[in-house]
Image 1: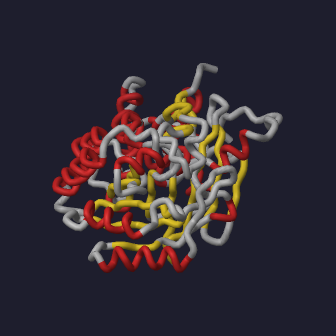
Image 2 (image 1 turned 120 degrees about the vertical axis):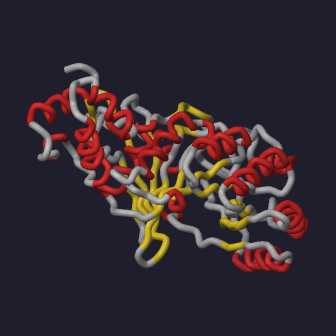
Image 3 (image 1 turned 180 degrees about the vertical axis):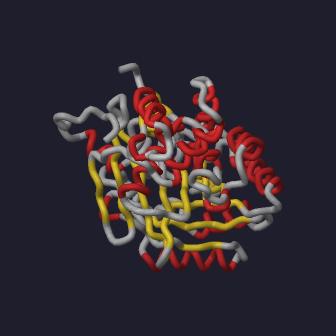
Length: 354
């Protein structure tokens, strides 16, 4: 059997071109795409409105279906999967309950991370490689098929999405395609550590998704200490955020700020945030640190976090102190992958599709 390609790598237009090369009419692409993304077909045999010969040809050349998790961890509000990739690498993704009837899927864009945030497990081994569009979509498909549906999707897992836009942009096209996932762009969030050029490319080429910037410090000096892989200054990054907001009718950018006890949670840090954000359309999310074994950072106490929040509210900032999710399942980015990599290899795991 020839090497099979990943169906999830293809936008509907790319799938139509692939099928046209094999003499198939355009409507077949719509049918296959709907089966793959709207109905979450696990095999081409399920695609009963396709001719048998076409189903056999698809199965010969393309892969489809959710990945079989290497491990799954769950608590009341979060389920995290560790998924195998074809080359033996692994990737993490999470489904989080965000309300009584709502959930979000959190997917990764890279294996490892070049930003190397000091408080995050993802970057402790550096960047391994980019994920393909198919590997990004396989996370979303696996979460939805194996764990449950969701109304929102966030690129907030391992890696820097804007350093992998050649794969992320096609995945956004698939996720917003009305023949497949049909997600509103406003229900998709792309989180970045602050890649100014990537923000501008997303603004120009991508759908009008939500943008979230991992801020974590009010000064370049502290930010580079905490996030040594960042390339651009705050001035450059915030200017790109301003352009994104202006392009999308003044929509505010979300700024994520991980609270680290005694590091970035003092009154002078609150004053610095006021200087950065008070004249910008913004929403500031304060995130209690998810403590990682072996790293020195700790979360502030609840009274300390509430006092910091009140200082920002007093400065007229639009701020929310978020509730932590998934602490008991190592839901912070990279923790499950690192735990798996420290174990002996599992016998019989091919890293292929289930």
